[in-house]
Image (cartoon, rainbow, N blue to C red; front, side, top):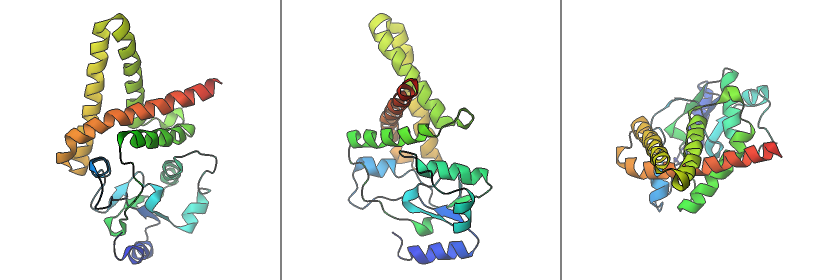
Length: 215
Protein backbone atom coordinates (compact mmCIF):
# COMPACT_ATOMS: atom_id res chain seq x y z
CA UNK A 1 0.00 0.00 0.00
CA UNK A 2 0.99 3.64 -0.21
CA UNK A 3 3.57 4.49 2.49
CA UNK A 4 1.26 7.12 4.03
CA UNK A 5 -1.94 5.17 3.39
CA UNK A 6 -3.66 5.92 6.71
CA UNK A 7 -2.40 9.51 6.91
CA UNK A 8 -3.65 10.14 3.38
CA UNK A 9 -7.02 8.67 4.29
CA UNK A 10 -7.19 11.01 7.31
CA UNK A 11 -6.37 13.98 5.08
CA UNK A 12 -9.15 13.08 2.67
CA UNK A 13 -11.63 12.70 5.51
CA UNK A 14 -10.58 15.99 7.09
CA UNK A 15 -11.04 17.68 3.70
CA UNK A 16 -14.69 16.64 3.61
CA UNK A 17 -14.60 13.31 1.75
CA UNK A 18 -16.94 10.84 3.46
CA UNK A 19 -16.92 7.87 1.07
CA UNK A 20 -13.66 7.05 -0.70
CA UNK A 21 -11.04 4.43 -1.43
CA UNK A 22 -9.22 2.90 -4.37
CA UNK A 23 -9.44 -0.31 -6.36
CA UNK A 24 -6.77 -2.69 -5.15
CA UNK A 25 -3.44 -3.06 -6.91
CA UNK A 26 -1.55 -6.33 -7.46
CA UNK A 27 1.79 -7.48 -6.00
CA UNK A 28 4.99 -7.34 -8.06
CA UNK A 29 4.83 -11.13 -8.39
CA UNK A 30 1.41 -10.98 -10.10
CA UNK A 31 0.82 -13.16 -13.15
CA UNK A 32 -0.66 -12.15 -16.49
CA UNK A 33 -4.28 -12.57 -15.39
CA UNK A 34 -3.90 -10.40 -12.29
CA UNK A 35 -1.96 -7.70 -14.13
CA UNK A 36 -4.55 -7.48 -16.89
CA UNK A 37 -7.80 -7.69 -14.92
CA UNK A 38 -6.80 -5.50 -12.00
CA UNK A 39 -5.26 -2.84 -14.20
CA UNK A 40 -8.84 -1.67 -14.70
CA UNK A 41 -8.65 1.24 -12.27
CA UNK A 42 -8.16 4.99 -12.37
CA UNK A 43 -4.79 6.53 -11.56
CA UNK A 44 -6.14 9.94 -10.57
CA UNK A 45 -8.64 11.22 -8.01
CA UNK A 46 -12.18 11.28 -9.35
CA UNK A 47 -15.79 10.55 -8.47
CA UNK A 48 -16.89 6.97 -9.25
CA UNK A 49 -20.06 4.91 -8.82
CA UNK A 50 -18.40 2.12 -6.86
CA UNK A 51 -15.40 1.19 -4.69
CA UNK A 52 -14.83 -2.41 -3.60
CA UNK A 53 -14.75 -2.95 0.14
CA UNK A 54 -11.22 -4.37 0.13
CA UNK A 55 -10.01 -0.76 0.35
CA UNK A 56 -13.01 1.35 1.32
CA UNK A 57 -13.44 4.23 3.77
CA UNK A 58 -16.80 5.53 4.92
CA UNK A 59 -17.68 8.10 7.56
CA UNK A 60 -19.68 6.96 10.57
CA UNK A 61 -22.61 9.28 9.83
CA UNK A 62 -22.87 8.15 6.22
CA UNK A 63 -22.63 4.50 7.25
CA UNK A 64 -25.47 4.68 9.77
CA UNK A 65 -27.61 6.99 7.63
CA UNK A 66 -27.98 4.24 5.04
CA UNK A 67 -28.10 1.42 7.66
CA UNK A 68 -24.67 0.00 6.88
CA UNK A 69 -23.96 -3.23 5.03
CA UNK A 70 -26.66 -5.77 4.28
CA UNK A 71 -25.83 -8.89 6.28
CA UNK A 72 -28.13 -11.16 4.25
CA UNK A 73 -26.07 -10.94 1.06
CA UNK A 74 -23.78 -13.77 -0.02
CA UNK A 75 -21.47 -11.27 -1.73
CA UNK A 76 -21.75 -7.88 -3.40
CA UNK A 77 -22.20 -5.97 -0.13
CA UNK A 78 -19.86 -3.27 -1.43
CA UNK A 79 -21.83 -2.82 -4.66
CA UNK A 80 -25.06 -2.63 -2.69
CA UNK A 81 -23.82 -0.11 -0.13
CA UNK A 82 -22.29 2.11 -2.84
CA UNK A 83 -25.59 2.03 -4.72
CA UNK A 84 -27.49 3.12 -1.61
CA UNK A 85 -24.91 5.78 -0.75
CA UNK A 86 -25.22 7.28 -4.24
CA UNK A 87 -29.02 7.33 -3.99
CA UNK A 88 -28.71 9.04 -0.61
CA UNK A 89 -26.58 11.80 -2.16
CA UNK A 90 -23.11 10.75 -0.96
CA UNK A 91 -20.44 11.12 -3.68
CA UNK A 92 -17.97 8.22 -3.90
CA UNK A 93 -14.35 9.10 -4.61
CA UNK A 94 -11.46 7.04 -5.92
CA UNK A 95 -8.01 8.32 -4.91
CA UNK A 96 -4.64 6.68 -5.67
CA UNK A 97 -3.26 8.27 -2.49
CA UNK A 98 -4.89 5.41 -0.55
CA UNK A 99 -3.94 2.62 -2.96
CA UNK A 100 -3.46 -0.82 -1.40
CA UNK A 101 -2.24 -4.20 -2.68
CA UNK A 102 -4.45 -7.30 -2.55
CA UNK A 103 -2.58 -10.59 -2.18
CA UNK A 104 -5.40 -13.11 -2.79
CA UNK A 105 -6.39 -12.38 -6.37
CA UNK A 106 -7.28 -15.28 -8.72
CA UNK A 107 -4.20 -16.73 -10.42
CA UNK A 108 -5.84 -18.75 -13.20
CA UNK A 109 -9.00 -18.93 -15.31
CA UNK A 110 -10.76 -21.43 -13.03
CA UNK A 111 -10.24 -19.38 -9.84
CA UNK A 112 -11.15 -16.23 -11.78
CA UNK A 113 -14.47 -17.77 -12.84
CA UNK A 114 -15.19 -19.01 -9.32
CA UNK A 115 -14.62 -15.51 -7.99
CA UNK A 116 -16.93 -13.92 -10.57
CA UNK A 117 -19.63 -16.54 -10.00
CA UNK A 118 -19.49 -15.79 -6.27
CA UNK A 119 -19.69 -12.04 -6.92
CA UNK A 120 -22.54 -12.61 -9.35
CA UNK A 121 -24.66 -14.60 -6.88
CA UNK A 122 -24.53 -11.74 -4.37
CA UNK A 123 -25.02 -9.08 -7.01
CA UNK A 124 -28.15 -10.69 -8.45
CA UNK A 125 -29.46 -11.36 -4.93
CA UNK A 126 -30.06 -7.63 -4.41
CA UNK A 127 -30.76 -6.70 -8.04
CA UNK A 128 -34.09 -5.05 -8.82
CA UNK A 129 -35.53 -4.54 -12.29
CA UNK A 130 -35.12 -0.77 -12.08
CA UNK A 131 -31.44 -1.22 -11.19
CA UNK A 132 -30.47 -3.07 -14.38
CA UNK A 133 -27.10 -1.75 -15.51
CA UNK A 134 -24.94 -2.30 -18.58
CA UNK A 135 -23.12 -5.26 -16.98
CA UNK A 136 -26.39 -7.07 -16.24
CA UNK A 137 -27.79 -6.31 -19.69
CA UNK A 138 -24.53 -7.50 -21.30
CA UNK A 139 -24.63 -10.68 -19.21
CA UNK A 140 -28.22 -11.37 -20.28
CA UNK A 141 -27.21 -10.86 -23.92
CA UNK A 142 -24.25 -13.22 -23.48
CA UNK A 143 -26.45 -15.82 -21.76
CA UNK A 144 -29.10 -15.85 -24.48
CA UNK A 145 -26.46 -15.96 -27.22
CA UNK A 146 -24.74 -18.90 -25.52
CA UNK A 147 -28.05 -20.78 -25.32
CA UNK A 148 -28.67 -20.08 -29.02
CA UNK A 149 -25.10 -21.16 -29.75
CA UNK A 150 -25.83 -24.59 -28.28
CA UNK A 151 -29.19 -24.85 -30.04
CA UNK A 152 -27.65 -23.67 -33.32
CA UNK A 153 -24.73 -26.10 -33.10
CA UNK A 154 -27.22 -28.96 -32.85
CA UNK A 155 -29.93 -27.81 -35.25
CA UNK A 156 -28.88 -24.82 -37.36
CA UNK A 157 -25.33 -23.70 -38.13
CA UNK A 158 -26.49 -20.22 -39.19
CA UNK A 159 -27.94 -19.58 -35.73
CA UNK A 160 -24.69 -20.85 -34.22
CA UNK A 161 -22.58 -18.48 -36.33
CA UNK A 162 -24.79 -15.45 -35.64
CA UNK A 163 -24.76 -16.12 -31.89
CA UNK A 164 -20.99 -16.58 -31.93
CA UNK A 165 -20.57 -13.33 -33.84
CA UNK A 166 -22.69 -11.41 -31.31
CA UNK A 167 -20.64 -12.84 -28.42
CA UNK A 168 -17.38 -11.80 -30.13
CA UNK A 169 -18.77 -8.30 -30.64
CA UNK A 170 -19.95 -8.13 -27.02
CA UNK A 171 -16.62 -9.11 -25.44
CA UNK A 172 -14.73 -6.89 -27.90
CA UNK A 173 -16.87 -3.88 -26.93
CA UNK A 174 -16.23 -4.63 -23.25
CA UNK A 175 -12.49 -4.81 -23.96
CA UNK A 176 -12.42 -1.61 -26.03
CA UNK A 177 -14.55 0.31 -23.53
CA UNK A 178 -12.33 -0.53 -20.59
CA UNK A 179 -8.93 -0.09 -22.25
CA UNK A 180 -10.06 3.38 -23.35
CA UNK A 181 -11.67 4.14 -20.00
CA UNK A 182 -8.55 3.22 -18.01
CA UNK A 183 -5.99 3.95 -20.76
CA UNK A 184 -4.52 0.44 -20.67
CA UNK A 185 -4.28 -0.11 -24.42
CA UNK A 186 -1.70 -2.90 -24.24
CA UNK A 187 -4.18 -5.07 -22.33
CA UNK A 188 -6.87 -5.12 -25.04
CA UNK A 189 -6.36 -8.68 -26.29
CA UNK A 190 -5.94 -10.15 -22.80
CA UNK A 191 -8.95 -8.28 -21.40
CA UNK A 192 -11.15 -9.26 -24.34
CA UNK A 193 -10.16 -12.89 -23.73
CA UNK A 194 -10.92 -12.57 -20.01
CA UNK A 195 -14.28 -10.91 -20.61
CA UNK A 196 -15.50 -14.09 -22.28
CA UNK A 197 -14.91 -16.02 -19.04
CA UNK A 198 -16.24 -13.10 -16.98
CA UNK A 199 -19.59 -13.14 -18.78
CA UNK A 200 -19.64 -16.95 -18.74
CA UNK A 201 -19.22 -16.94 -14.95
CA UNK A 202 -21.78 -14.15 -14.43
CA UNK A 203 -24.24 -16.01 -16.70
CA UNK A 204 -23.82 -19.10 -14.53
CA UNK A 205 -24.61 -16.98 -11.45
CA UNK A 206 -27.69 -15.61 -13.18
CA UNK A 207 -28.94 -19.11 -14.01
CA UNK A 208 -28.30 -20.20 -10.43
CA UNK A 209 -30.35 -17.31 -9.02
CA UNK A 210 -33.12 -17.89 -11.56
CA UNK A 211 -33.26 -21.55 -10.55
CA UNK A 212 -33.39 -20.61 -6.85
CA UNK A 213 -36.22 -18.17 -7.64
CA UNK A 214 -38.24 -20.87 -9.40
CA UNK A 215 -37.76 -23.28 -6.51
